[in-house]
Image 1 (tube, helix red, strand yellow):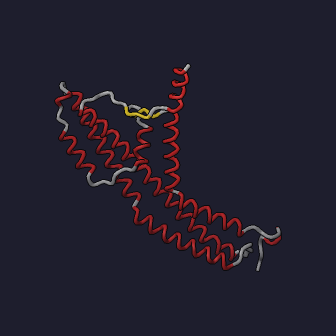
Image 2 (cartoon, helix red, strand yellow):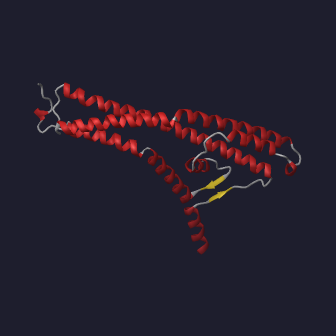
Image 3 (cartoon, helix red, strand yellow):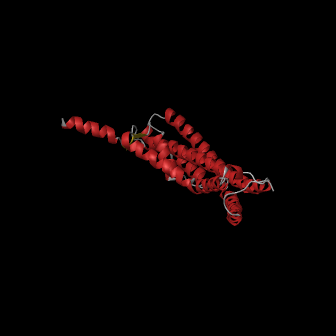
Length: 229
């Protein structure tokens, strides 16, 4: 009975451990190369998504900034006063300016490209090491220090990955990590919340812009929606 409940609870909670099939130092280093390359690719994808979302955010804010004066010129009557609309337009203009500066300084595309190139080099190095290990008869005596030095040289000038990138790598590398059950769900949820946190500020600004435009276009009566001067 207790064994049944223990086994069921263990399955629900899940496992969170590292799989160690080979204990030779060279194979441990090979594993670290594979994980490092995966983390670099995850970091590159994350930065690429941030670049795309930043562009979309700046575009949406700019369109909202242009839309409101055009609606005024078209004779649309807003349900909120002009001073509040003008203040909101100034806020949008400043937001676009600040966001454009942030995008320019962050250099998401350049960083994404550099980290992706680093991942490619590490992956190529791992393939070389795999070939050498396949040719070696005494794995315990295999000298992998040259590969280690080359890895340090590749990785020295590139920004490091984040914990988010590493956790995503663990979830997607079942050959090296066993993450199952509730533990896997919690880590996936944490990764999702971390991604949402990255996009939280621009999402709030976009939502605020849309809410103000929708509220301001609500007519007091159906005939008041369009006012021709």
